[in-house]
Length: 300
Image (cartoon, rainbow, N blue to C red):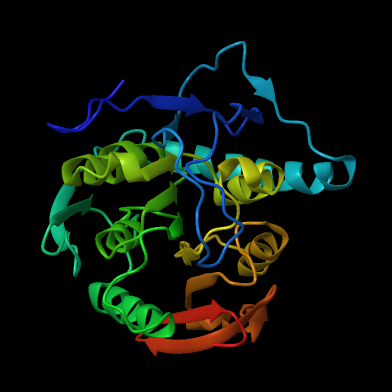
């Protein structure tokens, strides 16, 4: 159990385990929407934050998948479990530390420091790229200086959480973070969320992105439906970008009114097509080795 900052209600960090395909029954969405910028129904109870633990309650429900996707799901799961074991072994005898070299660039949290790993195993989106991305997004939705408070953000491969936290600072009401590495989630991502006092607006899922995308297809409505914005900042090494794109297209995390921000190395540019699902590529800009593509509704 972790406690919130002074003045904030206590937050309980509930546990899940993606490796055993066990999922808790949702206790209700924060507010149901079908994507886009429509009105929301009244919000439910505060969002809970999920992290992996060494044990699972016996009363948890087992997620049963339709036969036609079982084989593909297990293939993705085995691959991500192997990656998790590699990361665990890599850092088994290595003491990892953090430092504060990043800051929130704009919004009501502007200037707030963010911790990040001292090593190079986590590669946050560069500050100048992050600022440029948010400026382009805001100009696309009306030119305001901040997002509508009903917007929901999904930060995949969250790492430090800098992208999702920036979204909250600029007005988004809810952000879900997905991060596979347990140490990064506990010592970096959750520390940043707690230090800024934004726990009630956040949900952290410590699991593989592929696992999250697959499961979301079957609990989309329970989690509030598609997200308004999805940021994807995957590691450049050991990543099958074709599989990642297919996973995003098959999942229900995006709707025809969503925006998707995809950061990738220019070497894999062939994996990013002019369209992704029902979304059209609106921007594709290169910053050094990094390229950022923004997908959105075709009428924008």
